Image 1: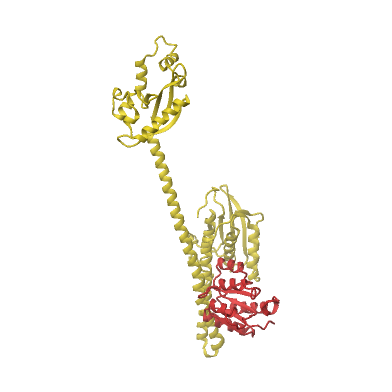
Image 2 (image 1 turned 90 degrees about the horizontal axis):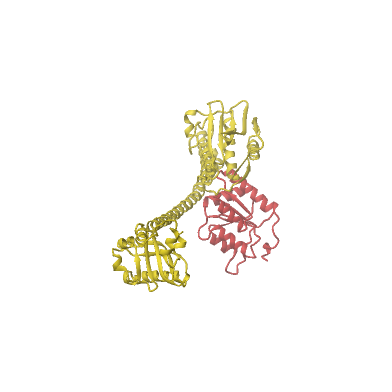
Length: 146
Length: 400
């Protein structure tokens, strides 16, 4: 089990609450760090000070975000050698084809539409957690930052 | 005959030669009568550009008598640029030694006139040009008509460009709308459902049966609305997506879809018969969506049948290939047939069969975008048959 924290980039407080609850119900105990807009997500991943860059096990990324949108965050993640192998799951409300196509073009590992039905949401979170924290073998480079 | 006449150095003699069968040679008066009774403008000028003769049409047109014109040049009669051009064309004909065809224009009291002109040199016995004759036919009306056509075409093109731009704007707005519906309506629904669930999970001991029932109803309504939003988006997408025509195997598609539907309700016994070799040309994604709706309907409306049966096939009707999806389910009342393909119209109550009435609207939209049609036959309680064509009977037509 990958014990690094999970980064949730989400501006909707209800969705934050649901995600935290869904992880809890699925017994996923990784710390969850929430960035409520794209700028904060980038500040955490690429700090300007000497603070160590944040190394999450997984990024759950909303598309529609204030300030810097999710696709721009994804582009920055993929263009920086420190984060280029970081697993990023786009987790969003819309299922617009352009969002799906652009997410994959920019290197998203997965695209998940947030289900309206909470039980489906919990199920999706469980599948994501099991796959990315337990089943998936992460790239060895990005945890060490090189 | 004219070619013998035109380059001849002695025009009257040449004309005589053509009349050799007659006893009387053609005289000057007769030739003048000939050139005076045409509505072409005829004239002859020497190499200095001085008029030697003009016909009556020339006199009429410019309001001058021929004895006033003889001896003058075009520079005495026309603006300089016009006269320069006439002169240049004269000299070209004289130098080339043969007829030249040019388009010329001359100002006139009622506006500019356009002519198609043949100019030819008159040669002396040594083969030297001593004059140039011209026959000018007025083509102003034709040119105006052509100009009119050009103008109308340009206007039409402009209108098409404007209309296309408008449509593109509308399509973009529709896209933005669909996006916003998808996002902004679903997010609060998710909140309502999520918090209803929290109430159930965390507060169920503090709610009585009625309270729990209310929460269950909230959740069920949210689920319906979520489905409605998704279906409306599908309808909008069926309208917006670009059509990619390719060969489509309807038999294979129908088989796949039925397997999916069966997978979701494995306990139901439904006899399905899909004819083999059903093929057409169309957008495979959209046709899949259309078939999915038709087959899901057939599946749904046979839900109360003891021996449910669905068949997919095709037949020829008036030289058209018509596909059909037939079931022996609930059917519908023929009286409401016209409402069948309207969005949000339902011919059954929600108690009888679930649904929101978008499915057939999607099917209708998809088929009409392909240039095809859909219609249905049914009798209440005795099943329904949905007939459809995918391509239009005239292969070029592509209604939007």
